Length: 117
Image (cartoon, rainbow, N blue to C red; front, top):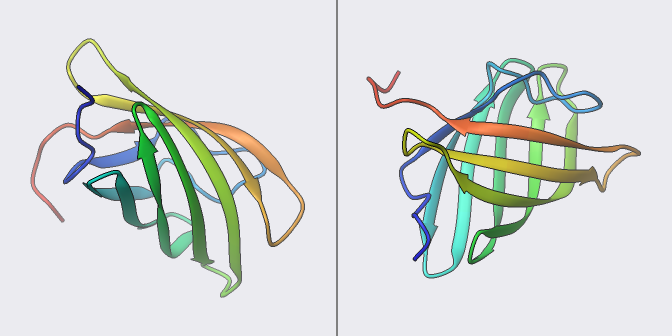
């Protein structure tokens, strides 16, 4: 059985080349009955949303975001969910912009439990 993403918070392990997500960007995930969605913000991202589906350990979603310069962008991402040795989750992402040229890969990891800002 897959570990649920619901209520988990993630951040990039490194700044994303060709992307706008960085280590200061925090994602708050939700999951229900094969649907996944998240809100994210931080660093160069003022506000972002993603929505898609989950099939086993594979996520397939679209994202839209507003950056610090007031520009909007959108794209598509496929992620693989992995469980780390300490029980936290890691997402290996392959993404591509749909609103502009560019694509890449990134890794986000679940943040340790702690106070919510």
